[in-house]
Length: 408
Picture: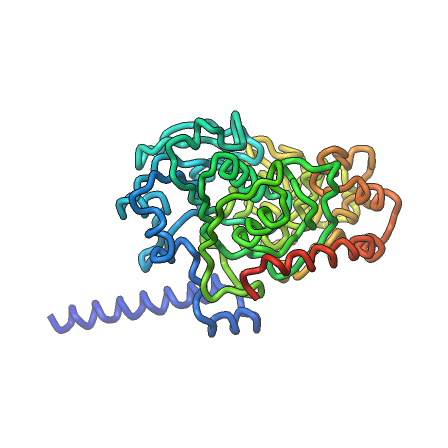
């Protein structure tokens, strides 16, 4: 028995050593900022602050706007907010699902159907299908709406459009809305061209920069305060705030916010590489490195050492340049960005063999928020010259933004 005990102890020790080595190999070396973050109190997302919002829901019929990121964390992992509410006796009547669906598996832009949640039996109403704004019938018999979706702080990421349309519906039908706040992983800066009113769309509904540096809760306050809801309406809004969060906080998203943002690098590069969505260049869709690379078959192969071939996969059934060898750049080891950059879009355009193939003008304008950016790139302006044209708008926005910030 003693030998067996020593054997078990030895095996357990080797397992710990192996696990530790494996973790060290997998984890990148911490930066000074990351080391500092480890000494700070842990960020508490609003969904975990049940004491702040459960009393507002008890005895009421509740609708929830949610997706796969809408979770309550605990020691063993996390539980979906809808499951958590039901387990606490809250009468969840309906779930409203944004782009990518309730469980977050639909392609970007893919029509999402209404349905039924297999786990809870709660009806699911798509806000990226037949309608993007809840109708009066859909809000009927609901006493309150709870909105809880992880955003990434980029204007053309459609979750803020969903927030706006839900708030408009709530304002029109006098349904209170509670926003459970979450960190913005790109909340540490404000940058990019500002949306022009004549080019607003679902990819940008208000005159804000491409990177706006606000959480969902802060942006909801701005929507109300600036009169941006339809007909100047104001929603009966309650924001449940984060704890231990500032706009400079490091935050790792434990769940991908959409199928093609799989990790921190992709989320950090998204403000810059997302502009490729308005071109014919592939930005990693159809690979396992979405928004961490770019390339196309029509870029000059002599200018690039990196090559890859996009194929249909999870989150991208029909990727650009499918089955073709793409020439471009691998950005998966890029250091954290504290600004958005045009250099990769400008690089690809400069090395495009047939520049008439590059821009999808309507789509690029919707993503940029202005037709001027395409014109500036085509005219050969430098990045510094282009960015200089943004500054007055950025400063004006920052002044407005101050009125709605909940965090330092």
